[in-house]
Image (tube, rainbow, N blue to C red; front, top):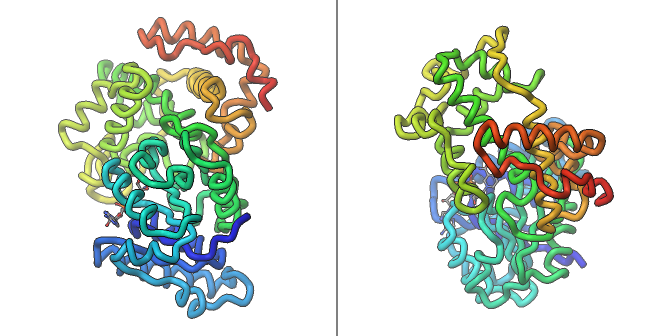
Length: 391
Ligand SMILES: NC(=O)c1ccc[n+]([C@@H]2O[C@H](COP(=O)([O-])OP(=O)(O)OC[C@H]3O[C@@H](n4cnc5c(N)ncnc54)[C@H](O)[C@@H]3O)[C@@H](O)[C@H]2O)c1
């Protein structure tokens, strides 16, 4: 089934260079296509130095040298030319729908009949991306997590018109890609819905976080104390440090996206809106929750604010897991838990909910009233506990 040999990596930025690395390690030939000379050079350097490090640690595949593996990587700017011999094009250009649609159309008109176009979009609908192309049956999503060589999860997404064969090829190729930290996990996403699996299940946590942040701001409680409430013990970074690191603009746009697609209850809260308007975006502007001007902050988490009930997060995430089961995005709660573990390195919400769904549902009724957010109400699958049978 998997006859893929030649892969075009379309977009050689942050994600593209990492995806190219694992494709090369799996033995594929890769042509990286980008429009930016500087980023092409950076991508080449990243791959070469990455392979040199792996070679010195004896971690390159058996019998493979840096010279051999780099001989299978070429770069260019001409997508039409590169598409001619492509079996699979993995697209990781900037997140703009009309650009992705155009590139998908160009690839499909200029590639062999069997060529698959797989988008690494984090949010866009695969059916929409395939809308104008001549072979929508060959278009799927392949959603990697950042950095692609380290994160175990790949979500392979079916658009309305994607064929079963295209999905199978996407899954087989994904399974063949090594992961430098643990075993690769490939999750099938049966419907292209916002956020796919992991981002979607975790997304409504922001509704409760916004409430907590706004409350703390009103009460003048220091961010360190709120951070101490919100952070997981032993996490490599506290939650608000991570929020600053990722960028408050990313959170702002993400919440607006879900507000448009799923529910207005996702709209950014007062604190996030203020941070966005005042350009207190975190690491990239030197100030967010914390001051980054002297490097990564080390918040003192010894004192808690006592504002957070962590069980509410567990309830919200389990409820969203049930929603994607109801929508047919996945057909098993186990896939949700495995995907969250592989994509985020912490356990998914569903297993806990099996024995506690009644309590979690009551909590959601209470908090949806308290916050004035109807989206937090428990859905039928959670309330009835019927998701338990969907293994
Ligand atoms: N960064 C993440 O954490 C992450 C995680 C999962 C998915 N994604 C998705 O992956 C995609 C890429 O994200 P990124 O973070 O790598 O972005 P990036 O900005 O680092 O890279 C995008 C690349 O696309 C190139 N590009 C722009 N127009 C092009 C064109 N017409 N032809 C070829 N190349 C073109 C740019 O020059 C750049 O190198 C986005 O769709 C994003 O949503 C990102």
